[in-house]
Length: 145
Ligand code: HEC
Image 1 (cartoon, rainbow, N blue to C red):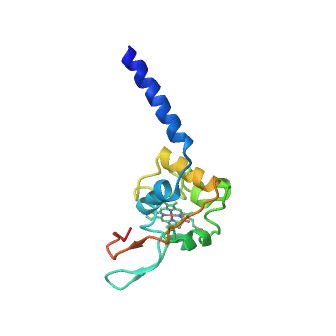
Image 2: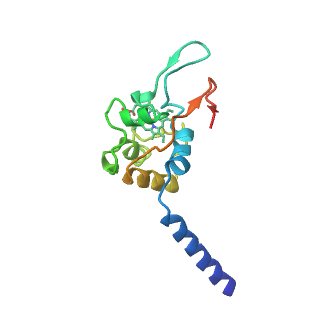
Image 3: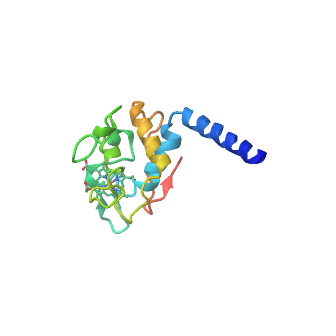
């Protein structure tokens, strides 16, 4: 009983400590974008067969400029306004909606923690800090750090 109480208290303070810290782009948002979005939303590149692959929806999420520029439907991120940020509204639709991102079966939907981090990052001004963009080799593997 005592142990159970201690564990509950510990879990409680841990949750508090975690929620008190605001989301950090490089640590909490970027890895999700790299893993779940950039396979389709990255700077144009040539495939092994010489075809040029362009970012889907004209949205390049692999560079700070690309995120700022948005895609064919306009702004992807509007600082401090998740309701105007397609980057957020598209990942929070019903997952059977045609516009849900990432498209069904192509990458895992965002987790609760990722959604929370994305929301916080946008609400805090959507700064991308020191990040200069993420590069990939022809096999889609991340290069550099
Ligand atoms: C398997 C490929 C694929 C993946 C992975 C993917 N998308 Fe997309 N995305 C698309 C396609 C195709 C479109 C264009 C059709 C449409 O608008 O639904 C698109 C369009 C979008 C748009 C609208 C752009 C515009 O202005 O027209 C946003 C925003 C978006 N995606 C966000 C994301 C986010 C965020 C992720 C990761 C969580 C993601 N996508 C992952 C294929 C992908």
